[in-house]
Length: 310
Image 1 (cartoon, rainbow, N blue to C red):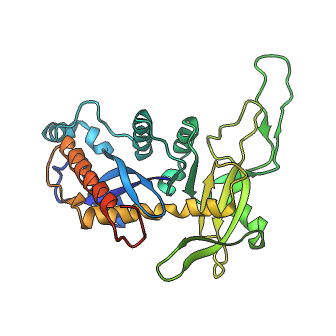
Image 2: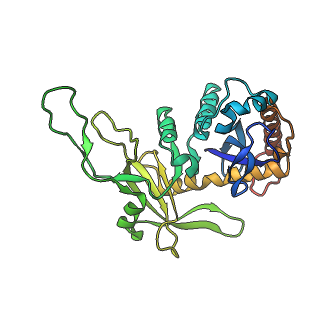
């Protein structure tokens, strides 16, 4: 799979390109930092970044930031863009090099964004994305209704009469007995397992993409519902086909853990967050060289925690 995510680079001062007070998952709070968006290739036994983009907050587009932009040599073509948009740009760049993922995974920061999901669908990419419980969907058997047509003007598109409900409501209505226990990875001490409920739904929200007949395509809804919890604790959606085994869907949903492994190795062993330069291009050169070192070590490693080919 490929994993899309971002990581923070804590900084002092305001001279580093893209630095601002913003939320960082690395810090677990709002802090003065840079944010780098990355795409990683990952398997069960190895992983490595493929591409990076430095996120520019909106404050770097304001007139008062002109001096800082010039000092950091930020190109005139580079401006604030959402992180999901940077991710799609990297996917297009990698596609231009002949690289496409078997499936793409990401957390709620990306999965909850309808524009990001539509961007993946427009590119014909399969995904398993973590989302929020309040995302809405129609049931599997819901059908659009064709409104009455007066014969004047364009014919109105079919619409769903049923009210979409939250993913949480769908899972709670199906009940915990609808699912079962599935294992997604063998841990160092024990297999990692939990109880999951899998349903087929039609995602709604503010910007659904219906077909010409008004039908919204079916998607997988994956909910993790541990035995000691009163309701599900995590949700994912996927556009993978309906014949994919449940264990494979869960394994894909849980494969995002590899990116945290990469960030830890890149920072603690290879100095990813040690760059003290002030240029936009210099930051990208630094992360590229660190990534090359990480890939070299990944290929050469002969005795990792999990077996991998040299």
